[in-house]
Length: 353
Ligand SMILES: [Zn+2]
Image (cartoon, rainbow, N blue to C red; front, side, top):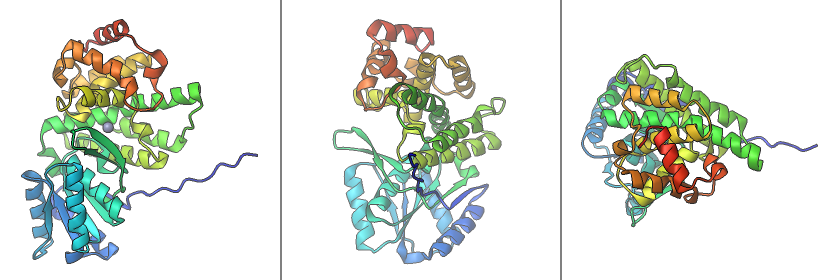
């Protein structure tokens, strides 16, 4: 009889969604004390402007006299080596990361390299990196790399802070979360066609994450209940990746399409915006309910057309054709093997061009 080994996974010990900085600070204080870290053993990592302001309000609440604050500019490898050397030189044991995806990505990556703790306090919800064991970093040629990182010990989210963040970032978060629907379908296609192993629990977690917001169609994007569901969904999506040990449950053909855009036409749109358009395409190719996906995105102002992600017709066709080359992962794109005429046809039928 074949034996099936058990998975050992790390998941955040605390996931708290609160309504103001006072509540968040009090939760953070409990967590830091339970971990045994206070004052000088912590490096507070943040971004510029609003993230830094928010961090300062937390530090003020906690009455920490002279916190060591490190401001991250870019999420590239030179920023990684700078942050690593600050952490090592000052013998830091814990990072409290307050900011957008870039800040949290670099914090998780350095925490993994140095084997120290990291607490994630996202100030917006633009992707599922807030709780995932994956970080996106740029190399010197501006190419993005998805790399293994440390899953945060705790994720704390202040809804009031997130609601003040740019709506465009929240829309990108919706795109990244809904993409789990097609990513999961791709995984099932790979199981059927090439006998790829599926982690059922991870798959279930990923689809549950997307469903958190899918049934909230009638709410507005700035509704607190909707943002809370988006937060819970993105956290769960990150955890589904820890369960499978890779990004498979939350990254299928729609993400390959987005990576292809990053390679060919970098910095045109946000990750979640590109992924949203990819999700419509993937759903169409998978013979899923792509109209439902598209109308959900339209309802919340998430991009559904090539021009909304800064691409001309010819460019988006090239990106779609390039998508099978970006990473070795079997999806609907490998199954259907589009040529230029088919790619144009799919983009037209879905109203993307
Ligand atoms: Zn993503």
